[in-house]
Amino acid sequence: MYSHPPALAFVVALALTTLSFVSAATLSPEALASQYGLATSTSMPFPTATQSNSDAQNLLVSQWSLGKGRIQDGAGNLAFVDDPFPSKPAPGATRNVTGPVMSVTYPAGSSSHDTGGTQLYTLWNTTDGSTFQTMMVTYEVAFDSNFDWVKGGKMAGLRGGINSTGCSGGHEADGKDCFSIRLMWRKNGLGESTFSISQSCS
Image (cartoon, rainbow, N blue to C red; front, side):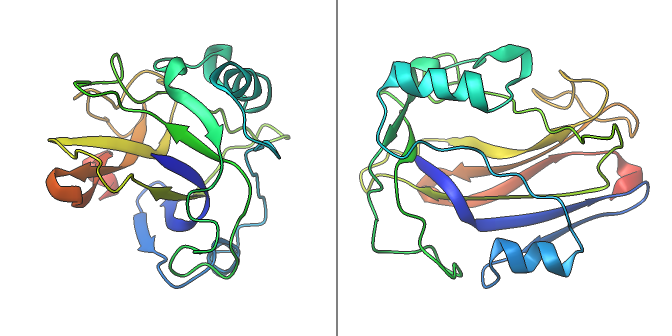
């Protein structure tokens, strides 16, 4: 799987009583952020040349502000490779991002983050200690043409709250401790989203 910004965009408006999702198939991430008045922007650093697994791990640990300072699972499945679609911008993109992309490998027979794929947490903090009320995550994903979709898998999303290990693996949010919003693929490449949020936010 290859992943890099921009193109697939979701806005998550986090307020005490409101949670809204907007698909941005035709808007650039910048235009969507502007529409919602998002003034702060952060881009994850990518290398200017391809990187082997060990170099990719070093870049992620040193520059991506990882939770606990490490890649939680599947560190050996990562590399930065040449963009397999250098002349094809994503649908809705106003520009094509060129350069290396992150490759995440799912070996044959893998069934979870312990055996394939990867898992890491990037910490998003404000410089003044305030909390975020709205966040937007954008990225672009491509799968190999012969990718075996099996039952499904999770992709990057947003997670937050005071409970850093809650809202995953079937642990539901209580409206005070955490939230989690992820994109997933299912059999035959069908997409869906999964949410762990309080009923009072729906």
